[in-house]
Image (spheres, rainbow, N blue to C red):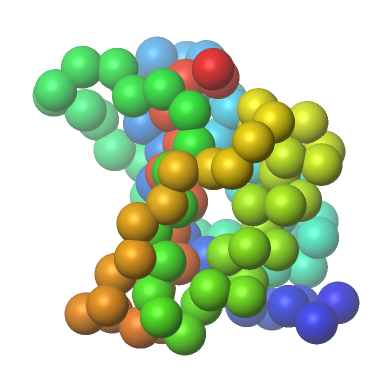
Length: 102
């Protein structure tokens, strides 16, 4: 409940129905957990994207770790760490990119 109402952007690749559905499931789960997901549906022109990736602003590390842990523990994400990059220019950014299920 410590993160209730906090925003997270979810970038969902929609080229294939499976990845669109997977992203929608993740968004619904995060909303059910009390977060405020903002879905951004995009088409990729560079080919399919697989798995989950986090882009984390310096002020959002704690929430990012909690989201990653919850996704792994719930078996939504594969075991092991979720790939992440730090966005030092946007300290309040937290974005989860969703591709095909791995």
